[in-house]
Image 1: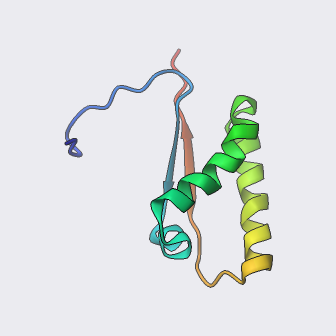
Image 2 (image 1 turned 180 degrees about the vertical axis):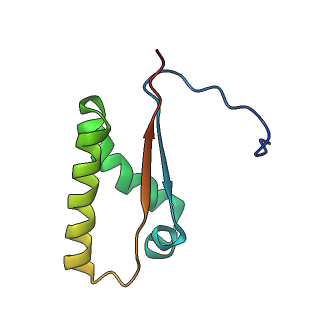
Image 3 (image 1 turned 45 degrees about the vertical axis):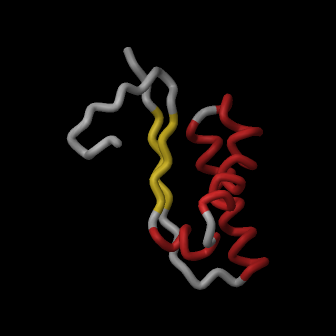
Length: 83
């Protein structure tokens, strides 16, 4: 089990997404969150973080209109780029 003090080795171009509890509250199950992120990442992962950011924003807008989201989603995307 990793702790915040353990070092995690990340390879070049790995992407990390952090999100707040509103995302968890909305989707209710971890599998649903993975599926939602996966839908975007399958199509845009090779295009880089900027394209993913645009598409995640589009997906959030779509969800907000379709499902009347009452939560404030916060998603932070980080991409590792080694020199």
